Image (tube, rainbow, N blue to C red; front, top):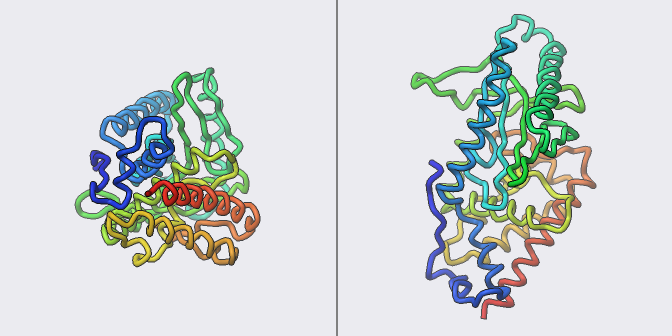
Length: 320
């Protein structure tokens, strides 16, 4: 599932980029366009190994405490939208033990307290486990940390299955399976459905000649290389691209410029009408943006659009 290799159509309108001499601006453009394609198998295997290593480290501790914890890789690793430069590993930590509690159905406050306790314990344990790591627990949904000396980035999310969790006959979770995700700042939960999101993203990507994932990867890479730190999360980038019409994404492999122009126009629409972003749905059908964060999120969209337009300008200027 993760083993497709980078490829650019040799007949593409951008094929001239491969003829660029070393150190030329054309090489930078070539590299940017290459980020549209899925990372190679070796890079993915390294990420999966890192995920499994952290999972084993935490599982050992949770087991000793008698906690019934389940782990799930989500985000770019699950959705195949990571790039070589944007290879953050998103991990969902699920409290299975509390799922079976009778009080779950009647008292959200109790399971929020359980998740807060799990998050706080994990944060302190990570500090002792990886004293050299840069650990940040300031975000509402995740604990983020980077392992040194090689920069391996992780984001840990905390949640539990909804009571209506069901399995299909083959033993896999159905697309109706949902998770309550902890929002640490508001002490509330957010419903998400990574299985439904993956199915919908697969369907849209197939319809649009693979351009849905290609564009998500490119925008994520643009964000990583940006000089600004005020940028959209990977989740919101995925949601913005997912909200584009199939027609705007259905470009042949030799019309990459047209695809990027369609994306720029889509971002402009959000900027010109800030309320429009409040109706953007993620791939699992959930409102992706905060209606009360218009100014901050619009500024992030502007930054992404400016970076995209800069790339487009360089492509056009260096095409001939």
